Length: 116
Image (cartoon, rainbow, N blue to C red; front, side):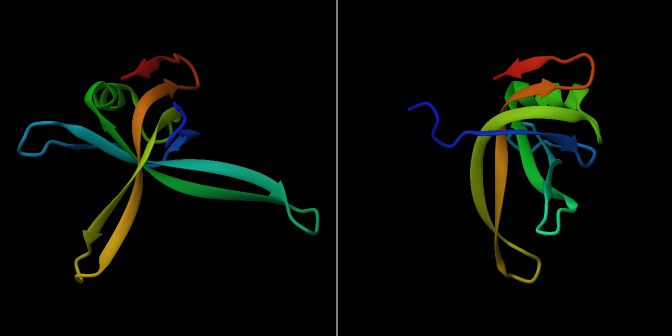
């Protein structure tokens, strides 16, 4: 089946991209994406919520992200979820779920689709 572990999001980039080049030279790019949802609560009032997602771009997607994505830019992405385990500065075990981006669509003028 082709729909296992597939994520699609549209939102605004929440920070400047961070380009990371480990010792093995395989560059990757990370940033956050804000998605918004609006609904009416029990009193009929409009409520807007924002969720934040960690994005990681590799290979061609990393090159495109580095060139064209900036803080505030609206993008649509497709990818898969990856959860990683790490220790914080105090030695506590933490988990982080990231979206490994495989496709990018730049929105808001000059749209360009990129597929890995």
